[in-house]
Structure formats: structure tokens, C-alpha cells
Length: 404
Image (cartoon, rainbow, N blue to C red; front, side, top):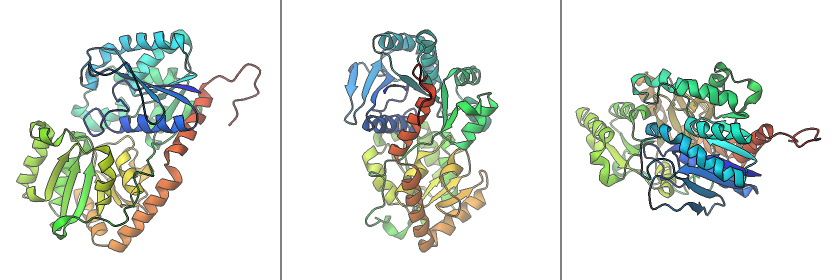
């Protein structure tokens, strides 16, 4: 099957952890690689955000990346990419007329716009993964919600026009149904995890100074709730907090959120127990997670959440807010603890519970690894995604059905 992946702002070649290159970049890269391993011809279309980028790049993982000229060849915030989607769509149409894909899989709502503009003309079957819905973001982020006013209305139109919509969590599937998408056109397929890279360490490298280590990972933006993590650690004198994500370490001082978090740590008197690492290379992330006694995820909202899944794959227990897709991944009392948001005392108690019971933490870590292996390998996620594609692609003339 020839698959066109459309990911306008999140290149699979980007370094995760920056503001606009997080979980979606990892998802597109890993899913494309897994689909290629299954014998599919996968081409990823992403916006050219640097002048020196070649027109095409062949990934070592078996898929190609096409850098689409749409807007200036420089990095711009994803909320400013929308005016360039018509140009993006023109490029897709010209490319697909020559070599039409069997299915086009759009990632994020703006990719969905470009994909649907082309599909209306060429009749290309389309699958849509939103990664985050504007209606949900507005509900949880309020004034921090920076997307355009028309996003929610546009997402509803894209979801109704797509041949198939993939929801990455139960919450998202329910939201799509509220938007008017028939349940018969929704497939629930979660994100996956690289089980070879993210695996339990042979011997855990404990934090220095005898302190318990709490690790939090994500883009350095307010919605990730790192301030909540800092406030929690202020009540646990025996623990240190390591925060990974954001710009390169040399540029942390220029980052507004990094300055805010460091100021908060100073105000609470825990500056020496809170470390901001900045951007961590992807290949170093398993080692960081393996070094943790517990991984803490305190977002104000999270559509899916790859970090707790990667922690579970490393055999590390997770304490997480029970928001978004996190309850689908973390099994409360089995692989970690789920805590209602805005309950700081419960969060501190959950962390203390895990940190003070090594045998329990080890058992939860083992259960987390077992769950990751049983449910979240990228090969399994690719197989489920292929099944969604088969529901989107019309059956050949005269065929009795699509098969499996």
C-alpha cells in the first residue's frame, strides 16, 4: 500500500522536546517506520522550515520525507502556519496526480485542511488523526489556548469529511462522537512505544546524594504543568526533580518558561533540588527515564501522553494526573497512581507512597513493562492503523469485502 503521511508542522526528522516538535514528531516517525517494515511505501510530507533542507530525504527506517515549500523556509510557530495551507495543498495535488497514494493519513487539523482540499479534487481516501482537538484544548487551557477561533469549526468539518478518523484515547473518541462523527467511522488506535530503546535498565543508576529522583519530561510550556511538579517536590525534602525538554541547554536562560520555573523553585527554596536539562537527545531519553525512581506527569491536559508509556516500558512506576488519555495508559494501582488534577496534597501523598515503598515501585514497574509489551508495540499499532486504512479505502470492484 502506498501511504501519504501529512504532518505539516511536526517533521519525523525533528528533535522532540521543543515547543512544536514533541509527541507528534515521534508518533509520525515511529508509525511510518513500522508501516514501512510491514512492506508499505510510506512518504511523509512536512513543511520546509529551513532553506538548506533537501527536497526529499530517505530515512534509515525505510520511509521518505518530502519537504513541502509552503511559506517561508524557516521555523515559524505552528499557529502561524495556517495561511500557508493552500500552498501546501497545491504541492500535494501536483505530487499525487503523478503518483497517487492509496490513502492519505493527515496528522493534526491543519494537515487535515490540506489533505481534504486535495481529496475533494482527486478522490483520495483519507484518514485523520488530530493528536489534539481544539474543543478539548479550549476547555482545559482557557486563555492559554492560542489556536485560531475557527479551529473547532474546521476540525468538525474535517472529521466529518474524512473517510476514517483515528482517536488515540477514549476521551478523544467520545469528543469526536459529540462532534457528530459516527462511531462506525472512528477507530481507536493509541500511540506506541519503541520497546527496544525503552526497556528496563540492567542496573538502575540512582541519583547522587542519596536523594530519590523524580523525572518529568515534555515541551517547556505552561500546559505541561511543570510548576505543579515543582510545588509537589517542595513538600518532599528527600527528592530531587529533573525536568527534560525545551530549547538546547545553552538557550535555557533565554526561555521564558524556564525562567518562570527557576524563579518558582527559588521562591519555594528548592532551587538546588530542581534541575532543568533543556532539550535531551532522543537516544539519551531511555537512560534518563531508567534513572528515575518515579516518573511524574502533571499536565493540565494531555491528549495521549507518550512519556508515561515510555516510562512504563522502562519498568519505572508513574504518578500522573488523571486527565486526557493518561487514564487509558496508566492503570491506577497497577502500573502507578492516577491523581485528580488540582489536588496537590493527593499528588504529594502519591509520590511519597511510591518513593517510600521500593518493593511496590518495583512491582508496578514490572507491571508497566508487561503492559507496554502486550499493548503498545509500534508493530501492533501499525497493524491496527492498517486496519483503519482498509476501512477507508474502497473495496475493489466486485469484491465481497475488505478482508481483515
